Length: 148
Image (cartoon, rainbow, N blue to C red):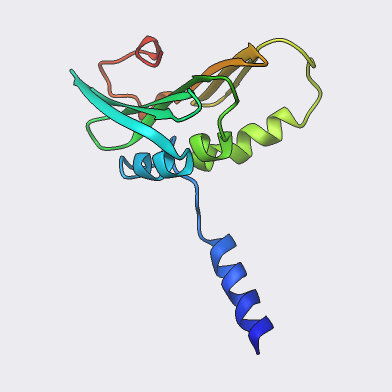
């Protein structure tokens, strides 16, 4: 009996989307903060968007860009370790992961674009950085240069 409850609990837990981030609502930013065990989170509002900056205790920084409709349209990361991209890319992670599993260069920066999804990542051990955005989620008066 205990095993069947445990299995049911595991299945329910795995079936529930735990990711947040890109393409998700503004509420997902709090989930990212918890997932990163962040020491600090700040926000700033600009004309047409809001930026949340999450600082992890180890020094990594993630910025999430929120449209006026409340959707995350871009994320930026930098730090000594790579962040959990499954968390930051949310429902777009599987598309990115599938593309990265194919043949590609072993070294150098990554640039990936599939439809409206763009992911750029680079750096080296101890200094990683990157950004991802979904062009179809951008507020109409903004360009990709906002996500930096």
